[in-house]
Length: 301
Image (cartoon, rainbow, N blue to C red; front, side, top):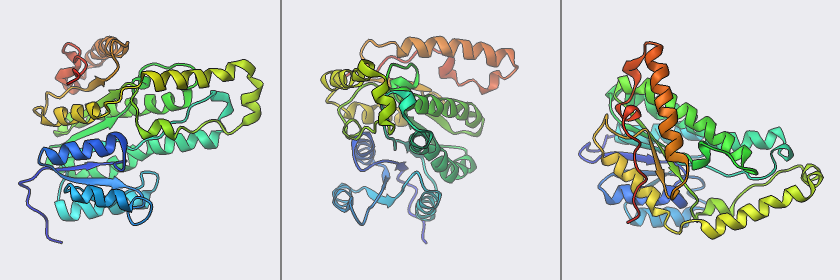
């Protein structure tokens, strides 16, 4: 295949049929990127979405992050045409909420298959070309509950904690090779993921918790009442990071969490991490942004 002109930067966004992923794809194409939107069922259930994306100049590619074959085929298609990727957004995700004990190990594996292993698959498919060019940006869409945990989100938060650890380790390992990593931590937003929450699969265990189990319903009502109706803020934050000069991008960006605890958590952990890396004789792995003042939450526009 003929490779397209490199005059247009190339972006790949996973989970781009709706929510943050679709909004990010739209923001990037509006900023002049050639965008590949990772979508499942492009010839079937999401055919209408694919047509809507195409009308905006966004090219959909079949990509199921839970399938090695699907990810490898998508990467082969994109790289054969584009030759390289400038921005890779690991956005695909799902949410499993409920009493932790009531989830069977098989269902917990499903949560990790999407939120953790999916990102690993995508990285392994695209990062070699970015490392070879010694340039690029890898963005992870995490969550504020990737930094703290509350009742009934243990399984989901565990997957985001794991994602954050892998992302941060990758930030240190990729920095000497010219590839930036940024972790975006949204607060509560009214997106489709809330409508597709998966609950525990062991009903007897849920019942054995009695009144405690009712807390999930209370939490979901509260989330629904307080969730922001401006999910485009997350897409705008990703675009802002992409526009930031390489080497000076923030490792973490909290979006839409009001006066929550996450910026303070990030600043405190960053200071301890800096001390550990310096003590272990690895200061060269430190991104400058890890030692700088914490990046303020993106202002609502």
